[in-house]
Image (cartoon, rainbow, N blue to C red; front, side):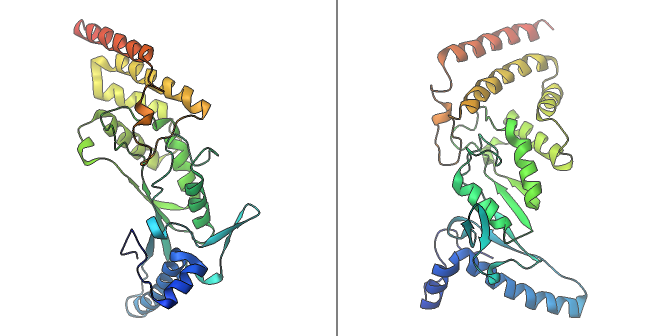
Length: 270
């Protein structure tokens, strides 16, 4: 349920008053609860089965129908609590994907939305926006916290994941690597991201694998340093700042180029 991602669906007097009380998200939950009850009652009577409904918590309906009271998330009223067959699909579009959702440096709005929905819902889908829209051929420093975010989603009650990406990234090797790591972890969160990175590079690059691992680690270590300082913002709305000279010093890039030149010579002799 959600037929518009930019503005309120209805501005009649009743909806305006109700929106002020329970927000747009509360209106959608109340509507879906009613629809779910009627349809599933009919389905159980006629077919002996039930179906699930999801509200798309996005844009104008992203904010959950809760209030924060003394650090706790409290439903505005009992009517905005999702029935057992009603869930929410959340798209943390403004999240800072340099940090996990356990990290207090994460975007406060997205932390509020994710934790707030948990107070009124038990069934979730996630539309993950860990995507590089500005420089999609460039290294994306997200794999180091990917496991933590998946653990957070698991605790939240997520049953379906969609990783946003650029349509033209399908031939970029590190996008394929991220898919490889993600799909492995979907089945087993016991995997180490570093082990999976090394496994993918070994399988993908063959004779050049060890050199590529060293080059990739240079970028990992560089951004890990800035992550530890709490300086980097990587989100859909952050632009290209994280690929600029504040984080990619000429000395660092020269080290990378030297390593690439050395790797080419090494592979040529194998």
